[in-house]
Image (cartoon, rainbow, N blue to C red; front, side, top):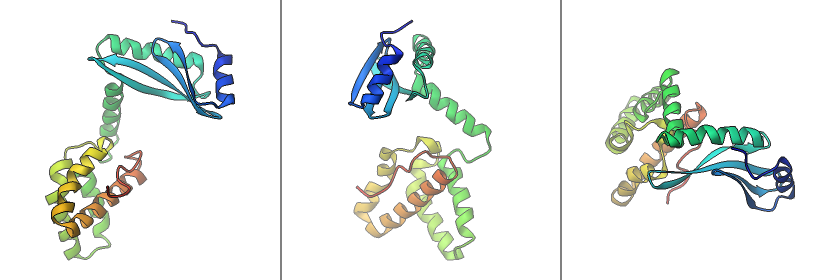
Amino acid sequence: MSGKLAVKDCRDAREKGTPTTLYDGGGLELRVTGIGAASWIFRYQINGRRRPKGIGSYPEITLGDARRERERLRKLVEAGLDPLEEEKAARSKAAAEDGKPKTWRELFEVWLDLKSKKWRLRTVRQVKLRVEKYIMPVLQDVLIPDINNNLVHKVLDKIWLEKPRQGKEVYMHLSSMCRHAAFKGLLAARPIRCRT
């Protein structure tokens, strides 16, 4: 499927830098957010729900590349598969094969082992009790990249109201685990930066 856009349209819009969206058809669009800032988005609908899937930045991903990727993604949708879910499953499979921690339970064990080399035995016990009581009931089986603000709030909201001091400690442990995961390349961004 060829589209409506020409390479010149994409280049001119990116160089001009005015925030806009250019439509190529078939769900492919180029979103320009500023001078030199443009990215490809594929919009699709599956199970009655409209979803956007990022393809990559322009000009690193050319118009031709974006069109080929659109066609690949459209075939997934036509087969009843959600491209975002397929990508997530592929990431999880890759994580499972590389020997790194995959779940928050495994991450906690690696993180605690690292921290226990610096902490007194009493501190290790207290931290382990707090994490087991407040964090693990919510996160233990969650894959590391699947953490989100809703899960973080599920862990923290109740404890902050009932036991603020414990809440602060739990927040610090969770934040430290997130930093460790990000440092090890297991997490793209820290889901918690401040209390809300």
